[in-house]
Length: 335
Image (cartoon, rainbow, N blue to C red; front, top):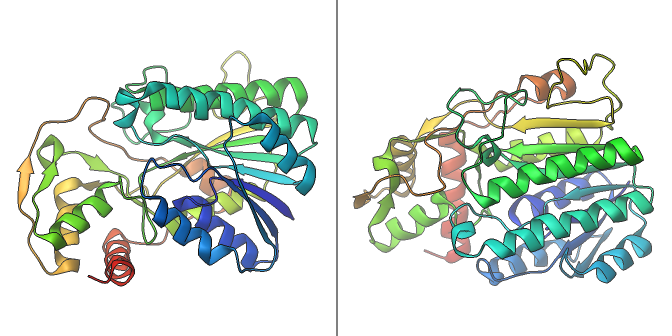
């Protein structure tokens, strides 16, 4: 297939591109290489992709309608995976307009290109952040997500609503994926694993929010990408069991689906730090702090729907994933 991946220089996007190229797909990567985090890491991911047969790259933003339309016109993708976004819960408190530009305006441009270019299937990144103030665990796609606690979460919920509208009005098949705390080699420097590893190796103290008591459904990158590919290959149709009198948020009479992608095994932050310490062979100096604004205390993914529909089954224990990340980090940064 010809697959356009936005955010192709990102953590998930670059890993997905390699997997699709491995199986013989053609991939057009699209990324603006912004400076939200170290551009050198994004470029290093990209440098591993550019020599590969079947890979092309366009540097531009989702907000650039002309550039995006030109990429669609030139490549004529059959399927699209939208992973480009302004990420980060905490940064949304500092720079909210970046989230509207990339995650709302940019996503509208993606929908319009998919609509007018006859794309067979749009898979897009949502987030576990949409569950917001919910405290019922595990989080299920059938649950209400009407109480976001960050603008980032609100923008991702907006994407789900926008996608449903296009699925309903234009019969554009769309699948939204609510990712749960992705980690692993080539990961993001703003995520806890990266931050903690860097600081512990440097002998610097680490900030441990919520006093280390909150839990996260840490999901290894290979398991995430496996879920993305399984959903990409399964074009949704109208749900014949959908009941308009008791509507489920996860499906529709339109060709629309939502899934959680997680490990379904939450780990307390304090235990996560212990695993990092074990992998590094060094104890961290910890600064225990309260929960930050915009954060949620706990996450856990109910992945029954994804397992039922695609056979997805996460297979990487967190201790194995953390060791792999630390080994990659030491090698990449030569520390």
